Length: 239
Image 1 (cartoon, rainbow, N blue to C red):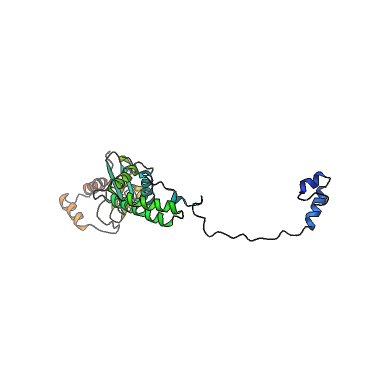
Image 2 (cartoon, rainbow, N blue to C red):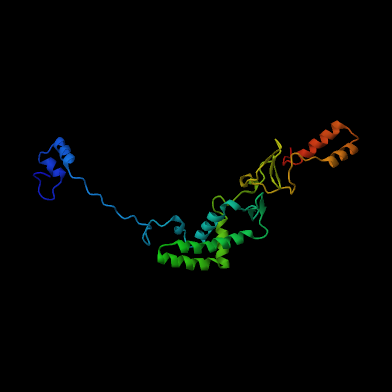
């Protein structure tokens, strides 16, 4: 800067009488600042704060419960009222009578080794590997499941299941009894009761119709009433 001591800056130049117009003119004649390409780090240094959230899960029973939920949230629920786990089997929620959740807990424990493999910090990697070994013990697996029961999205009230009385589970989906439409079986329907029958809207029932005709002696009005009552029994309605 003109008339400014060494290491002086534009502030000092303006204080000594330089004007904004003169400042703009100087900038217009200034040599371009050389471009320096800084190297882009392909990965953060070991122990940096940019390690992924995956690696920040606590090495404790609480942390393991969080791992379990992160991996299996979509397919497990726990009902405290019924003191039971429920698992999604692809078409409905079934009570876990075969301890499937323990198999899922073992898978969650084994996943800790993958966390260790991805960890860039040597010290934490060693701790994760040791935690993985400890987590495969029976008490730690039980602790994982006990704490996972109360995690958000896992605990469920008993009356949340089968709440829509007009939805009827079948082997190939969910039947909407209001419209006769076959819907995909979805977890959020929370259906636990299902028929093993494959629903086919075009199917006929000649044996059933012959039975009705014989028993009610061809009385069409009475036959229609019995058919109506039979269909009503498919719903969960009681009034």
